[in-house]
Image (cartoon, rainbow, N blue to C red):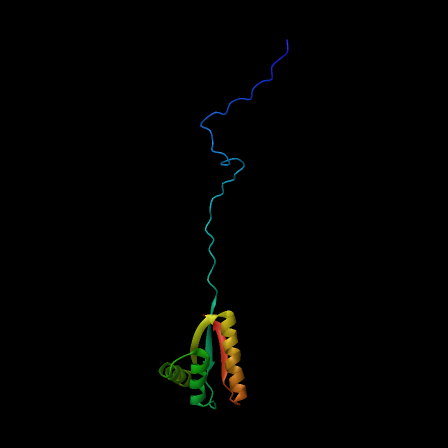
Length: 118
């Protein structure tokens, strides 16, 4: 008498649709949060030689302030010794500082511009 091959055990539970659950890995979705970039203030410092008109022109040209706002910032620089021109990411702030310093050198003014953490 020859033995008959054994039949595989029938699956228990409801049958799964083809292609689902076979070798699939379920991972929980984790929210990825990126920190916003650090911000820096671009600050102009007062001196006794740079003309007010030059400061206003620089504020309008490089920081896109209107005439009234540029005048107010220039007066703050004049009276308080320093004034914030704008707040930007690190690379943008550094670029604006370099542009202002280059313009001041080109026009032979001792105007100083710095950046500091906001």
